Image (cartoon, rainbow, N blue to C red):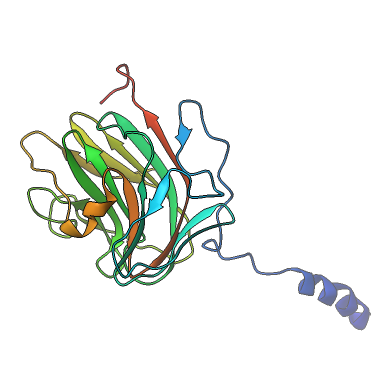
Amino acid sequence: MLALVLTVFLPLNRCVEPSAPRNDRSPEPAAIPPGWTRLFDGVSLKNWVETDFGGQGRVEVRDGMLILGRGDDLTGVTWAADEFPKTNFEISVQATRLDGQDFFCGMTFPVIDAFCSLIVGGWAGSTVGLSSIDGLDASENETTRSMDFENGRWYTIELRVTDDAIEARIDREPVIRQALEGRHISIRPEVRLSRPFGFASWRTKAALRDIRIRRLNDAEPR
């Protein structure tokens, strides 16, 4: 009788596989909500150009992803279509670090009459912050924080720029709110070619998808 029980349950045990690691892949991007516009079509580099940093890795589009190959040092893409808004806008992007140990999302964006960069996963892989505030980069100013990032896991990164502040969230968690009054906003010279809007990775292979923008209306809270 015992032998019969074993023959029944052993095949069932073989069928139960461990669940896939949660950092393998997140679900595909959902349909775009009302009010948002896609900036990346998932099949081409339309409206983007590869950023000629020098020493950059290969940029390719595959399986709905914009892949930034590992470079020496920076690899990136820059927006090359219509004029980009300077304030009162929100950006959402899904990003993942495929290989490497540094930032996989360096997003450079306008801030009224200046530019700034949101760094995710920099300085050996864990630093999040804005570069630069009063001349201090993302590892040195009050926006600096440390977070753990898993290679291969997708993170939803949201950025909001208004006349008053720069705000950022990662996976819906608020990580930055930087008031603008009385502060000097700038970028590091390495990413000048990312203006007016662009993404870059540092010695890291990264992937981006579901890049979108929406303009904020006057009725929304700032």
